[in-house]
Image 1: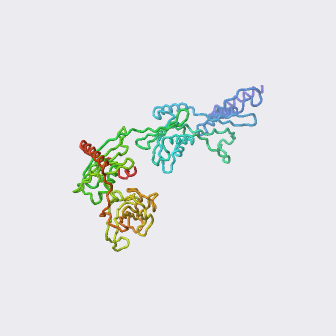
Image 2 (image 1 turned 120 degrees about the vertical axis):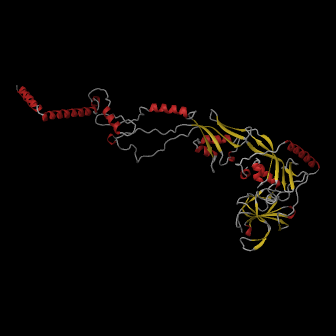
Image 3 (image 1 turned 90 degrees about the horizontal axis):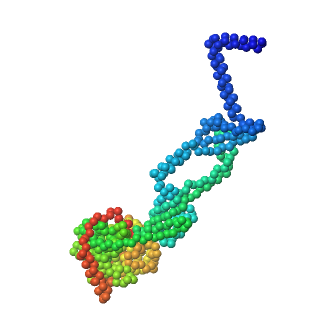
Amino acid sequence: MTFLAGWQDSARTAAATLSTQEGRWAMVSTSLTAMIAGSIAWLAVGTMPPMSARGFGTGHERTLLPYQLFLKLTQSNSTTSDASFGSFGSAGTRARTSPRPDSRLDDALAAEDAGDNGNPMPGVETRTLTLDHGDTLAGALEDAGISNEEANAAVAALAKVYNPRDVRAGQSFDLTYSTEEPRTASPSVASVNPDAADEDDANPNGAIEPATTTPVGHLISMSFSPSVEHDVTVSRSADGVYTANDATKKLEAHVHRAGATIDSSLYLAAMQAGIPADVVVEMIHMFSYEVDFQRDLHPGDSFEVFYSYYYTPEGQPARDGNISYATMHLGGRTVTLYRYQPDPNQPADYFDARGQSAKSMLMKTPVDGARISSGFGMRFHPVLGYSRMHKGIDFAVPVGTPVMAAGAGIVQIAGRLGGYGNYLRINHENGYGTAYGHLSRLAPGIHAGSRVHQGQVVAYSGNTGLSTGPHLHYETLINGNQVNPLTVKVAGGRRLDGRDLRDFLISRLHVDAQLASMPLEAKVADVSTDLRQAKAK
């Protein structure tokens, strides 16, 4: 009865309370508070270890979805951590990473894209390797990612067909190699304090070990062209052995008859006529004993040259052949020269139509394409400030221009000599001599007592001594006295006779017949080729 009376009192109190607006709001508020408290209690139960972990018999391990969801919402990266607890009273954390749910889709899309637009041979790449100054071929291969063993093996194979020491800076190599993703050491499993989840996992005071990486991959092949007529390839066989092959292109010789009228310079006119630069240089050397290219050439003069040139099967120019004939019409005189080799063991020479060698004992100019800036005779010395005898001629050339020996002989003086600066004197036959002043340096191997041949590069022009600018001072001496190099008469070269003369005349008639059957070529030259490139060959 007491319980019933109490319940009736509570019901009357509740009814009285709900009959007012304030009472109804209080009831709703109390109900919501109870619901929230129940939810919190349920979450707390969910984070407790299973019954089996507390020693209450066997049970099933719970999936801790609320806590996992909490971690997932609080982490900023894409990894998901699963936490489980050990035995009751000693909790531990085990962390593992898993790929994103869409990683397989991303990989599939990436593979499809690579197959459509990327490398048609997955795992194989090609690149062009160009050597810089100071590089070695083996070192450059290693820098490109090839292992030391394979780089050395490839160079060793190359040495059987081509000397690696002949490789120069600027040479390009086409490489083909298999690619591999670099491998790094797997991170070790570490335990993490669950109460410090926001701290870095790395130990700042721990030992740092470098990552283990692998080279780019295996070198499959390497190819390059040391010259236009050679293609060298080093390839790797299935058993990993490298072999080299030098494919030589069979060159075809073509003959050309070309000429032009000189408007400004012989070189420019020859280039406009389509004559290769190296042929022009050889033609200048041919006539250097008979023609003063500074004083003898005038607008309206003309020339003609009959020469051979070698081409690859694709039609690419490879190298020059020989000039069989050349002629120059200079004002009122004509100089014509033919190539002939009387002695197979000696270089070929050039002779006029009567068999007289074009060579004289001394060349008229010891430098190519030089302008005479000061002649022989009295002049006002620009450094000393008064007039004095200028016992030579000056050629205005840049510093470093090669200086050739005007004739064969023996070096008498090679060193610094007063106002001459760096000075070189060569004694020739019959009391003749030549001297070269204001040099920047001597050529390798040139010293007092050296024997030189005509046309050999013996020094390089400069600006040493009493000089106001870069130039070459050139002197001709007879019995030790300076004479004018432009007017001195020197002995001529060899004159053919006997059987040599007969064979030469037959060869000359054959060349004349070829000239009569060929038209004169007229074409525009490749303006990208210049005299400096021809000299470098």
